[in-house]
Image: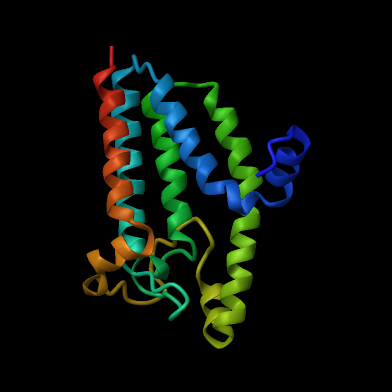
Length: 189
């Protein structure tokens, strides 16, 4: 990997999809490391929002059969990109819980730079892989903000812990995120 500043900048701008996960993790680590929560209700609300995002990601990962079939049940009946929806909830919750207000600007820039291209790339890939199923699903299912009424039955029984572990290692990620929230909570002054 070339560490020249111009090369790094070029990679971040033109190959952002490769850096998105690492930068998101670094953002969460920075929030935890720099946190100094002093407003109890903000910590509690933030922890609840982050926990909802963690649960939403776990739910989504347990319904995901990457590249084998178009996931349309569970959270995918509410939103096309529930893992990203979960990410937004997690980051918002961590920012509120950690009360490192200047990192809000960093998070907004991160979201603007990385998520629209990622959503476009994934929608394009899904459209190519599942052309007949994808178009009607896209027409009735929003990208990020979940519908209040699902477009089809949620099929809660089809969730799989094994699948959530296999898809993204989601239970391990959830445990680490909960640890981060706990560390911030211990600093609550």
